[in-house]
Image (cartoon, rainbow, N blue to C red; front, side, top):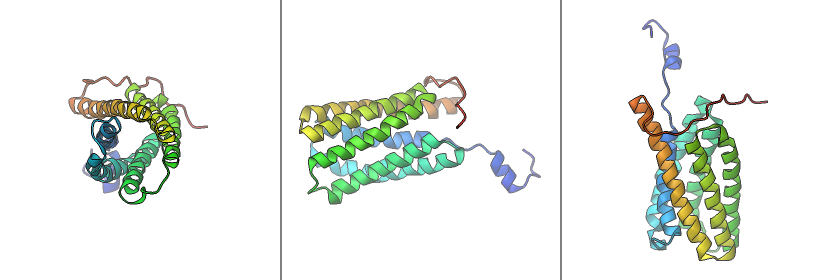
Length: 203
């Protein structure tokens, strides 16, 4: 790069860091911690640490990743990271301050609608890597199971949702690690099975 270039041109020619591993890691870590509670490994007394993590890493850091995806032109990444960052903020606010008198059936609808959002994001992810596709796939199943548990009062459904949430977290951790390690090493160490075809142009 020529030193004679104006600052704006030098900035435009510089490489932007990939914010996706940050968003995936924040999502994965917080999901893992909450899912241990849902799976029955810990009781509700452990939620205080989950809430702190939800505000900081799952919420704020993930939303920062979403904002950073915007100038990269990544609609899926922008929507997903900002949405799930907002999910963790809403969850933490609900549990900490607002949830004492809300019917469980209404919580079920909250979880179900998040499952609907995740389902169409999963469809949108089918032109991305297989590792990212699997995160969205397992996540909408997790939301559905947790919604069923809230609607029916079934601890079995909630525990199943907890275990699928743990699987989701592992998949998200893998995708984040693969992005960081592969880029740092300059070659594929952890395969992600990227989509080989060009993304279709918008109509």
